Length: 90
Length: 90
DNA sequence: ACAACACTTAGACAATTGTATAAATGTCTG
DNA sequence: CAGACATTTATACAATTGTCTAAGTGTTGT
Image (cartoon, rainbow over all chains, first blue to last red; front, side):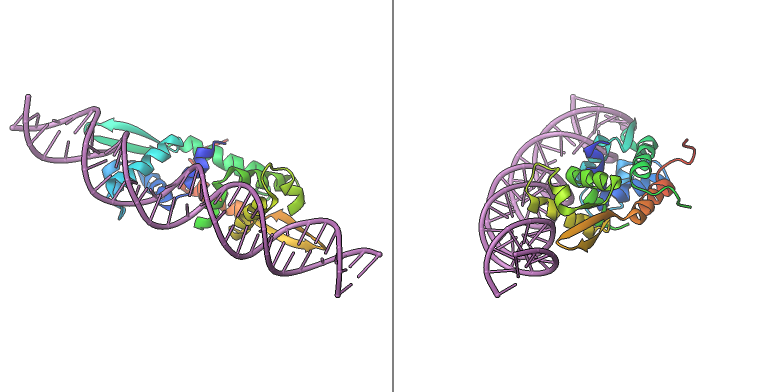
């Protein structure tokens, strides 16, 4: 498991971004307008999420659309389940 | 989901400690001797893990025994599965 | 080519964090 | 109770991080 992955998840703004993306894919601007911080700061967070491979991007004209990389989340769930969680949960 | 939880998981030393505890419960000293950093530093990490409720402690004479709190890991797995992971994984 | 728009990158700064050493707390045994 | 042992807490400091403003890159339309 990559260190960058856990570091990326450590920030609440980034987790909020991931939750927004779990609803549907969104452009950088659509994401940024949801937060009280500067667009550039959100862009920085998006870069961190991308560096951790938690999201992927696709250019759409002027826009850049972000989407969740569900594969990484599956690996994460597997990591926690196999190592730390007891086997008998509902 | 608590912010402290994700912050606690962000450090590689702390994740290593959790992996050690997933094998079996251990005292602070048994954990500390596995790392190249000062005992006090490991103790600090243990405090962070405890603050995030990822571990629990029990005094045993002079020793303090640490154990994994598997409940929190189960909640974590559920958080990731319901929000982020697609449903059709093996 | 130019201007407007969408977004990222660079540079600076304050806040947080990981580590160290030193001091403190708690427990056991003679 | 004194001394040894196990561990935590206090304090300090360098490294990392989140945020900002300003500048840069890429795309569209005139």
